[in-house]
Image 1: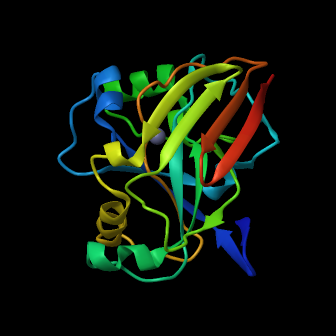
Image 2: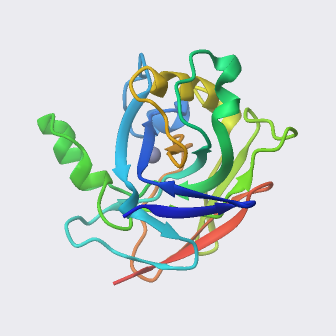
Length: 218
Ligand code: ZN
């Protein structure tokens, strides 16, 4: 089942979510990861997406669920971007989302060299806000992002701090996949990730895109 995104007069059907790991230096440092020689890419199915205002049931297979607030790109056409100069033409819109991660589960998987799906691709792991169209005035290298848990500001960053810029990510993904209209890219999280618990309200904001929130429930 695909996830429907309404933007202007168009309806997009999302089936895939590409996620980028380790794209902000300070976040790499806080998790003591290595600086990547190429973008770290993983995927979530579209069934992980949760519209803002809905609740997020806390998963039962882990104890330490971290928020990772991220700028999200909506791909608007099919094909491969060969060069960064054309990458922007593949973008239909922007939103903000959360890449929820069970850090305790991920730690165990990493130690054993196993895939991350249990820690990253569980149901409700990808809250997503509404989308705005990519207008000519939006600077992809200057998108602010903030994340609150209850009234506590936990993350504050800007796409200017990305190791791999949004256009570069689109070209990198195009080396491996033909992009399709409706694809989403979660572009990585700035520093400040931390655990949420049942009862918390989590809110993400970008000054151009808007502000969205979800409640964590049992
Ligand atoms: Zn992430």
